[in-house]
Image (cartoon, rainbow, N blue to C red):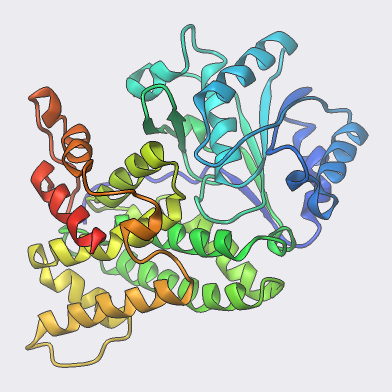
Length: 395
Protein backbone atom coordinates (compact mmCIF):
# COMPACT_ATOMS: atom_id res chain seq x y z
CA UNK A 1 0.00 0.00 0.00
CA UNK A 2 1.24 3.50 -0.87
CA UNK A 3 1.41 6.49 1.47
CA UNK A 4 -1.80 8.55 1.44
CA UNK A 5 -3.67 11.50 2.89
CA UNK A 6 -7.42 11.06 3.22
CA UNK A 7 -9.84 13.76 4.36
CA UNK A 8 -13.57 13.40 4.96
CA UNK A 9 -14.97 16.89 4.52
CA UNK A 10 -18.68 16.65 3.72
CA UNK A 11 -21.38 16.33 6.35
CA UNK A 12 -23.86 13.77 4.97
CA UNK A 13 -27.40 14.27 6.30
CA UNK A 14 -29.22 11.05 5.39
CA UNK A 15 -32.80 9.82 5.59
CA UNK A 16 -36.50 10.45 5.11
CA UNK A 17 -37.63 14.04 5.38
CA UNK A 18 -34.16 15.54 5.75
CA UNK A 19 -34.88 17.79 2.74
CA UNK A 20 -37.04 19.86 5.08
CA UNK A 21 -33.96 20.89 7.07
CA UNK A 22 -31.94 22.57 4.32
CA UNK A 23 -32.60 26.09 5.63
CA UNK A 24 -31.63 25.18 9.18
CA UNK A 25 -28.43 23.52 7.93
CA UNK A 26 -27.41 26.49 5.77
CA UNK A 27 -28.31 29.27 8.21
CA UNK A 28 -24.95 29.06 10.07
CA UNK A 29 -23.05 28.92 6.76
CA UNK A 30 -24.49 31.72 4.61
CA UNK A 31 -26.78 34.74 4.52
CA UNK A 32 -27.39 34.66 0.78
CA UNK A 33 -27.06 31.68 -1.57
CA UNK A 34 -27.31 30.75 -5.22
CA UNK A 35 -29.94 28.01 -5.70
CA UNK A 36 -28.97 26.00 -8.81
CA UNK A 37 -31.41 23.46 -10.24
CA UNK A 38 -32.77 21.94 -13.47
CA UNK A 39 -35.77 24.23 -13.75
CA UNK A 40 -39.18 23.36 -15.16
CA UNK A 41 -41.14 20.52 -13.61
CA UNK A 42 -38.18 18.36 -12.59
CA UNK A 43 -37.24 20.28 -9.47
CA UNK A 44 -40.92 20.60 -8.51
CA UNK A 45 -41.43 16.84 -8.31
CA UNK A 46 -42.41 15.67 -4.83
CA UNK A 47 -42.85 19.33 -3.88
CA UNK A 48 -39.07 19.67 -3.58
CA UNK A 49 -38.87 23.20 -4.98
CA UNK A 50 -41.46 24.49 -2.55
CA UNK A 51 -39.84 22.59 0.33
CA UNK A 52 -36.44 24.11 -0.36
CA UNK A 53 -37.60 27.67 -0.88
CA UNK A 54 -39.88 27.62 2.17
CA UNK A 55 -37.14 26.18 4.36
CA UNK A 56 -34.68 28.85 3.20
CA UNK A 57 -37.20 31.65 3.80
CA UNK A 58 -38.22 30.33 7.21
CA UNK A 59 -34.59 30.37 8.29
CA UNK A 60 -33.77 33.80 6.92
CA UNK A 61 -31.53 32.56 4.12
CA UNK A 62 -31.86 34.77 1.04
CA UNK A 63 -31.44 33.20 -2.38
CA UNK A 64 -31.21 33.85 -6.10
CA UNK A 65 -31.90 31.10 -8.61
CA UNK A 66 -29.93 29.55 -11.44
CA UNK A 67 -32.33 27.21 -13.31
CA UNK A 68 -31.75 25.46 -16.60
CA UNK A 69 -29.01 22.94 -15.86
CA UNK A 70 -28.89 20.13 -18.45
CA UNK A 71 -27.09 16.76 -18.59
CA UNK A 72 -23.43 17.16 -19.52
CA UNK A 73 -23.59 20.65 -17.92
CA UNK A 74 -22.44 23.61 -19.99
CA UNK A 75 -19.81 26.16 -19.10
CA UNK A 76 -22.09 28.87 -20.55
CA UNK A 77 -24.56 28.40 -17.67
CA UNK A 78 -21.70 28.29 -15.19
CA UNK A 79 -20.64 31.74 -16.39
CA UNK A 80 -24.19 33.01 -15.86
CA UNK A 81 -24.14 31.66 -12.33
CA UNK A 82 -20.85 33.34 -11.56
CA UNK A 83 -22.22 36.71 -12.65
CA UNK A 84 -25.34 36.21 -10.51
CA UNK A 85 -23.20 35.43 -7.46
CA UNK A 86 -21.07 38.52 -7.96
CA UNK A 87 -24.05 40.76 -8.63
CA UNK A 88 -25.97 39.63 -5.52
CA UNK A 89 -23.11 39.07 -3.08
CA UNK A 90 -23.73 35.35 -2.75
CA UNK A 91 -21.57 33.46 -0.22
CA UNK A 92 -22.63 29.81 -0.81
CA UNK A 93 -23.88 27.78 -3.78
CA UNK A 94 -26.64 25.19 -3.30
CA UNK A 95 -27.14 22.54 -5.97
CA UNK A 96 -30.46 20.66 -5.89
CA UNK A 97 -30.46 17.82 -8.39
CA UNK A 98 -28.15 15.13 -9.72
CA UNK A 99 -24.52 15.25 -10.73
CA UNK A 100 -25.02 17.81 -13.49
CA UNK A 101 -26.57 20.34 -11.11
CA UNK A 102 -24.03 19.71 -8.37
CA UNK A 103 -21.11 19.93 -10.82
CA UNK A 104 -22.53 23.22 -12.11
CA UNK A 105 -22.78 24.51 -8.53
CA UNK A 106 -19.17 23.54 -7.85
CA UNK A 107 -17.91 25.18 -11.03
CA UNK A 108 -19.76 28.38 -10.13
CA UNK A 109 -18.28 28.25 -6.63
CA UNK A 110 -14.80 27.89 -8.13
CA UNK A 111 -15.28 30.69 -10.64
CA UNK A 112 -16.65 33.45 -8.37
CA UNK A 113 -13.34 34.29 -6.62
CA UNK A 114 -11.26 33.78 -9.79
CA UNK A 115 -10.22 36.84 -11.75
CA UNK A 116 -10.62 35.39 -15.22
CA UNK A 117 -12.78 33.00 -17.24
CA UNK A 118 -13.82 29.91 -15.28
CA UNK A 119 -12.77 27.59 -18.12
CA UNK A 120 -9.17 28.55 -17.36
CA UNK A 121 -9.50 26.58 -14.11
CA UNK A 122 -10.46 23.42 -16.00
CA UNK A 123 -7.57 23.77 -18.44
CA UNK A 124 -4.97 24.73 -15.80
CA UNK A 125 -6.13 23.35 -12.46
CA UNK A 126 -3.29 24.90 -10.46
CA UNK A 127 -5.12 28.22 -10.82
CA UNK A 128 -7.89 27.11 -8.44
CA UNK A 129 -6.86 28.39 -4.99
CA UNK A 130 -10.17 29.57 -3.55
CA UNK A 131 -13.86 28.70 -3.87
CA UNK A 132 -17.20 29.50 -2.30
CA UNK A 133 -18.66 26.76 -0.07
CA UNK A 134 -21.11 24.34 -1.71
CA UNK A 135 -24.15 22.48 -0.36
CA UNK A 136 -26.33 19.91 -2.12
CA UNK A 137 -29.63 18.07 -2.06
CA UNK A 138 -29.23 14.93 -4.14
CA UNK A 139 -32.08 13.79 -6.40
CA UNK A 140 -30.17 11.26 -8.55
CA UNK A 141 -27.50 9.02 -6.99
CA UNK A 142 -24.84 8.37 -9.60
CA UNK A 143 -21.85 10.66 -9.82
CA UNK A 144 -20.96 10.89 -6.13
CA UNK A 145 -20.54 14.63 -6.64
CA UNK A 146 -22.41 15.23 -3.38
CA UNK A 147 -19.33 14.16 -1.41
CA UNK A 148 -16.48 14.28 -3.92
CA UNK A 149 -14.19 17.11 -4.90
CA UNK A 150 -14.64 17.13 -8.65
CA UNK A 151 -16.76 19.00 -11.19
CA UNK A 152 -17.25 17.85 -14.79
CA UNK A 153 -18.31 20.51 -17.28
CA UNK A 154 -18.67 20.62 -21.07
CA UNK A 155 -17.43 23.42 -23.32
CA UNK A 156 -19.64 23.24 -26.39
CA UNK A 157 -17.37 25.54 -28.39
CA UNK A 158 -14.37 23.23 -28.08
CA UNK A 159 -16.36 19.95 -27.69
CA UNK A 160 -14.37 19.24 -24.53
CA UNK A 161 -15.67 17.71 -21.30
CA UNK A 162 -13.10 18.18 -18.55
CA UNK A 163 -12.89 17.22 -14.87
CA UNK A 164 -11.84 19.90 -12.39
CA UNK A 165 -10.67 18.13 -9.22
CA UNK A 166 -9.82 19.91 -5.98
CA UNK A 167 -10.65 19.35 -2.30
CA UNK A 168 -11.93 22.93 -2.21
CA UNK A 169 -14.95 21.70 -4.18
CA UNK A 170 -16.07 19.08 -1.66
CA UNK A 171 -19.50 20.16 -0.38
CA UNK A 172 -19.80 21.38 3.19
CA UNK A 173 -23.11 19.58 3.64
CA UNK A 174 -25.20 17.23 1.48
CA UNK A 175 -28.70 15.92 2.06
CA UNK A 176 -29.46 12.37 0.86
CA UNK A 177 -33.18 11.68 1.19
CA UNK A 178 -33.88 8.34 -0.55
CA UNK A 179 -37.55 9.18 -1.10
CA UNK A 180 -36.42 11.80 -3.62
CA UNK A 181 -35.20 8.98 -5.90
CA UNK A 182 -38.62 7.32 -6.30
CA UNK A 183 -39.66 9.23 -9.43
CA UNK A 184 -36.49 8.65 -11.42
CA UNK A 185 -36.93 7.18 -14.93
CA UNK A 186 -35.55 3.66 -15.27
CA UNK A 187 -32.92 4.81 -17.74
CA UNK A 188 -31.51 7.27 -15.19
CA UNK A 189 -31.53 4.60 -12.49
CA UNK A 190 -29.54 2.27 -14.74
CA UNK A 191 -27.06 4.96 -15.77
CA UNK A 192 -26.60 5.98 -12.15
CA UNK A 193 -25.99 2.46 -10.87
CA UNK A 194 -23.30 1.81 -13.45
CA UNK A 195 -21.71 5.22 -12.96
CA UNK A 196 -21.15 4.56 -9.26
CA UNK A 197 -19.85 1.07 -10.02
CA UNK A 198 -17.39 2.60 -12.47
CA UNK A 199 -16.13 5.03 -9.82
CA UNK A 200 -15.16 1.99 -7.77
CA UNK A 201 -13.68 0.11 -10.73
CA UNK A 202 -11.41 3.05 -11.59
CA UNK A 203 -9.90 2.87 -8.11
CA UNK A 204 -10.09 -0.87 -7.51
CA UNK A 205 -8.25 -2.09 -10.61
CA UNK A 206 -4.62 -1.39 -9.76
CA UNK A 207 -1.10 -2.78 -9.88
CA UNK A 208 -0.42 -1.57 -6.32
CA UNK A 209 0.28 -4.50 -3.98
CA UNK A 210 -0.94 -5.21 -0.43
CA UNK A 211 -4.23 -3.32 -0.60
CA UNK A 212 -6.31 -6.07 1.03
CA UNK A 213 -8.44 -3.85 3.29
CA UNK A 214 -9.56 -1.40 0.60
CA UNK A 215 -9.94 -4.24 -1.91
CA UNK A 216 -12.36 -6.03 0.40
CA UNK A 217 -14.35 -2.84 1.08
CA UNK A 218 -14.57 -2.04 -2.64
CA UNK A 219 -15.64 -5.58 -3.50
CA UNK A 220 -18.38 -5.51 -0.85
CA UNK A 221 -19.64 -2.15 -2.12
CA UNK A 222 -19.78 -3.43 -5.70
CA UNK A 223 -21.73 -6.54 -4.68
CA UNK A 224 -24.22 -4.48 -2.66
CA UNK A 225 -24.70 -1.88 -5.40
CA UNK A 226 -25.31 -4.61 -7.99
CA UNK A 227 -27.75 -6.48 -5.70
CA UNK A 228 -29.79 -3.44 -4.73
CA UNK A 229 -29.35 -1.77 -8.13
CA UNK A 230 -31.34 -4.64 -9.60
CA UNK A 231 -34.03 -4.12 -6.97
CA UNK A 232 -34.49 -0.36 -7.43
CA UNK A 233 -34.49 -0.83 -11.19
CA UNK A 234 -37.44 -3.21 -10.80
CA UNK A 235 -39.00 -1.48 -7.76
CA UNK A 236 -38.27 2.27 -7.93
CA UNK A 237 -40.03 2.98 -4.60
CA UNK A 238 -38.12 0.42 -2.54
CA UNK A 239 -36.84 2.65 0.27
CA UNK A 240 -34.42 0.20 1.90
CA UNK A 241 -32.72 -0.66 -1.38
CA UNK A 242 -32.44 3.03 -2.27
CA UNK A 243 -30.69 3.52 1.07
CA UNK A 244 -28.04 1.01 -0.01
CA UNK A 245 -27.65 2.38 -3.53
CA UNK A 246 -27.88 6.05 -2.56
CA UNK A 247 -25.23 5.95 0.14
CA UNK A 248 -23.19 3.52 -1.94
CA UNK A 249 -22.90 6.17 -4.65
CA UNK A 250 -21.45 8.64 -2.16
CA UNK A 251 -18.90 6.17 -0.82
CA UNK A 252 -17.96 5.20 -4.36
CA UNK A 253 -16.63 8.65 -5.17
CA UNK A 254 -15.32 10.19 -1.94
CA UNK A 255 -12.01 8.40 -2.66
CA UNK A 256 -12.29 5.94 0.23
CA UNK A 257 -11.75 3.12 -2.25
CA UNK A 258 -8.75 4.88 -3.79
CA UNK A 259 -6.67 5.03 -0.62
CA UNK A 260 -3.05 3.91 -0.92
CA UNK A 261 -3.16 2.79 -4.54
CA UNK A 262 -2.47 3.94 -8.08
CA UNK A 263 -5.84 4.52 -9.76
CA UNK A 264 -6.74 4.13 -13.43
CA UNK A 265 -9.49 6.43 -14.85
CA UNK A 266 -8.88 5.60 -18.52
CA UNK A 267 -12.50 4.52 -19.09
CA UNK A 268 -13.77 7.76 -17.56
CA UNK A 269 -11.49 9.88 -19.71
CA UNK A 270 -12.64 8.14 -22.86
CA UNK A 271 -16.27 8.26 -21.70
CA UNK A 272 -16.08 11.96 -20.90
CA UNK A 273 -14.73 12.65 -24.37
CA UNK A 274 -17.60 10.70 -25.94
CA UNK A 275 -20.13 12.60 -23.81
CA UNK A 276 -18.66 15.94 -24.82
CA UNK A 277 -18.50 15.02 -28.49
CA UNK A 278 -21.79 13.18 -28.97
CA UNK A 279 -23.81 14.37 -25.92
CA UNK A 280 -24.40 10.79 -24.75
CA UNK A 281 -25.22 9.78 -21.17
CA UNK A 282 -22.13 9.41 -19.01
CA UNK A 283 -23.17 6.24 -17.16
CA UNK A 284 -24.23 4.59 -20.40
CA UNK A 285 -20.87 5.36 -22.00
CA UNK A 286 -19.10 3.67 -19.09
CA UNK A 287 -21.32 0.60 -19.41
CA UNK A 288 -20.10 0.23 -22.99
CA UNK A 289 -16.44 1.05 -22.36
CA UNK A 290 -15.71 -0.81 -19.11
CA UNK A 291 -16.10 -4.40 -20.38
CA UNK A 292 -14.09 -3.45 -23.49
CA UNK A 293 -11.34 -1.94 -21.33
CA UNK A 294 -11.19 -5.03 -19.09
CA UNK A 295 -11.02 -7.29 -22.13
CA UNK A 296 -8.12 -5.27 -23.54
CA UNK A 297 -6.00 -4.83 -20.38
CA UNK A 298 -6.60 -7.90 -18.19
CA UNK A 299 -3.40 -9.64 -19.27
CA UNK A 300 -1.46 -6.74 -17.73
CA UNK A 301 -2.39 -8.02 -14.25
CA UNK A 302 -4.35 -11.31 -14.41
CA UNK A 303 -4.30 -11.79 -10.62
CA UNK A 304 -6.21 -8.54 -10.09
CA UNK A 305 -8.90 -9.51 -12.57
CA UNK A 306 -9.21 -13.06 -11.23
CA UNK A 307 -9.77 -11.55 -7.80
CA UNK A 308 -12.52 -9.33 -9.26
CA UNK A 309 -14.14 -12.19 -11.17
CA UNK A 310 -14.28 -14.40 -8.09
CA UNK A 311 -14.98 -11.89 -5.30
CA UNK A 312 -17.32 -9.52 -7.15
CA UNK A 313 -18.86 -11.43 -10.04
CA UNK A 314 -19.11 -14.76 -8.18
CA UNK A 315 -17.24 -16.83 -10.76
CA UNK A 316 -16.18 -20.30 -9.63
CA UNK A 317 -13.54 -22.49 -11.22
CA UNK A 318 -9.91 -23.49 -11.18
CA UNK A 319 -7.28 -20.89 -10.34
CA UNK A 320 -5.03 -22.84 -12.71
CA UNK A 321 -7.17 -21.46 -15.53
CA UNK A 322 -7.18 -17.73 -14.72
CA UNK A 323 -8.18 -16.59 -18.19
CA UNK A 324 -11.38 -18.64 -18.08
CA UNK A 325 -12.29 -17.02 -14.76
CA UNK A 326 -11.67 -13.52 -16.09
CA UNK A 327 -13.58 -14.05 -19.34
CA UNK A 328 -16.54 -15.45 -17.40
CA UNK A 329 -16.38 -12.37 -15.15
CA UNK A 330 -16.59 -10.13 -18.22
CA UNK A 331 -19.60 -12.08 -19.51
CA UNK A 332 -21.36 -11.75 -16.17
CA UNK A 333 -20.71 -8.01 -16.15
CA UNK A 334 -22.19 -7.78 -19.66
CA UNK A 335 -25.23 -9.76 -18.49
CA UNK A 336 -25.73 -7.30 -15.62
CA UNK A 337 -25.52 -4.42 -18.10
CA UNK A 338 -28.19 -6.12 -20.23
CA UNK A 339 -30.41 -6.59 -17.15
CA UNK A 340 -30.40 -2.81 -16.70
CA UNK A 341 -31.11 -2.36 -20.42
CA UNK A 342 -28.01 -0.25 -20.91
CA UNK A 343 -26.40 -0.01 -24.36
CA UNK A 344 -24.16 -2.93 -25.26
CA UNK A 345 -21.98 -1.18 -27.83
CA UNK A 346 -21.04 2.25 -29.13
CA UNK A 347 -23.62 2.18 -31.90
CA UNK A 348 -26.42 1.65 -29.36
CA UNK A 349 -24.88 4.40 -27.23
CA UNK A 350 -25.27 6.90 -30.07
CA UNK A 351 -21.82 7.04 -31.65
CA UNK A 352 -22.68 7.30 -35.36
CA UNK A 353 -19.69 5.51 -36.87
CA UNK A 354 -16.04 4.52 -36.38
CA UNK A 355 -14.62 7.40 -38.38
CA UNK A 356 -13.71 9.49 -35.32
CA UNK A 357 -11.86 6.79 -33.35
CA UNK A 358 -8.37 7.92 -34.33
CA UNK A 359 -9.23 11.59 -33.75
CA UNK A 360 -10.62 10.79 -30.29
CA UNK A 361 -7.61 8.68 -29.33
CA UNK A 362 -5.03 11.18 -30.53
CA UNK A 363 -6.81 14.12 -28.89
CA UNK A 364 -7.03 12.25 -25.56
CA UNK A 365 -3.32 11.47 -25.52
CA UNK A 366 -2.00 14.64 -27.13
CA UNK A 367 -0.71 12.66 -30.10
CA UNK A 368 -2.52 15.11 -32.39
CA UNK A 369 -0.11 17.78 -31.09
CA UNK A 370 2.94 15.54 -31.44
CA UNK A 371 3.34 15.13 -27.66
CA UNK A 372 1.70 11.82 -26.77
CA UNK A 373 1.05 11.19 -23.07
CA UNK A 374 -0.68 7.92 -22.23
CA UNK A 375 -3.77 7.67 -20.01
CA UNK A 376 -4.60 5.12 -17.33
CA UNK A 377 -2.84 3.62 -14.32
CA UNK A 378 -3.10 -0.17 -14.51
CA UNK A 379 -2.01 -0.08 -18.14
CA UNK A 380 -0.89 3.18 -19.69
CA UNK A 381 -2.77 3.53 -22.96
CA UNK A 382 -1.36 5.20 -26.05
CA UNK A 383 -3.60 6.36 -28.86
CA UNK A 384 -3.43 3.03 -30.67
CA UNK A 385 -4.55 1.25 -27.49
CA UNK A 386 -7.54 3.57 -27.21
CA UNK A 387 -8.53 2.87 -30.81
CA UNK A 388 -8.33 -0.86 -30.05
CA UNK A 389 -10.63 -0.45 -27.02
CA UNK A 390 -13.09 1.59 -29.07
CA UNK A 391 -13.04 -1.15 -31.72
CA UNK A 392 -13.94 -3.74 -29.07
CA UNK A 393 -16.68 -1.45 -27.74
CA UNK A 394 -18.04 -0.99 -31.27
CA UNK A 395 -18.46 -4.74 -31.71
